[in-house]
Image 1: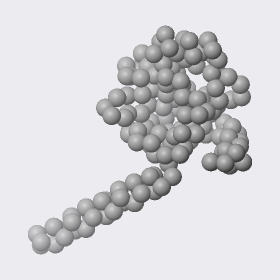
Image 2 (image 1 turned 180 degrees about the horizontal axis):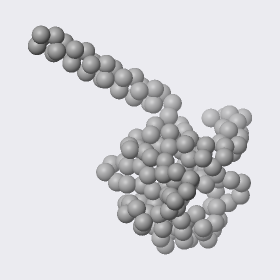
Image 3 (image 1 turned 135 degrees about the horizontal axis):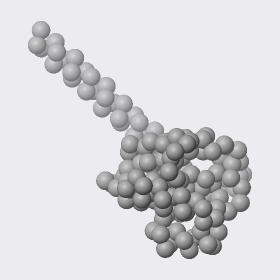
Length: 156
């Protein structure tokens, strides 16, 4: 991605409010192979905004979208949410970067930090792969429907 397109993309997700960013991240996770992706809702989420599954492991994701670096509070929330929901991994996903103290606490508490660079990398995997996957899934569903209809005709 050239520098101008990269700046344009950064402006795109930097302008989102918190709920828009959570929904965007949920869609991005789905496009990157996560299953059962659920946005928990604004209140009472216990520090986890999204719960998702990948390779039989559960992820609790705290989304943060604002200017400046994220401090320890987001890491504490992800840790508490991971514990509360009994998840395998806790993650803070954000549109920017993390403070040194947040990185240190994340390492001690085994919380994954997914920063702006991770977002950009996840976005790369949504291009043709996502389109091809969607087409193949649609073809499989349509094929299954035709088989079902054909089988039902044989019965009558």
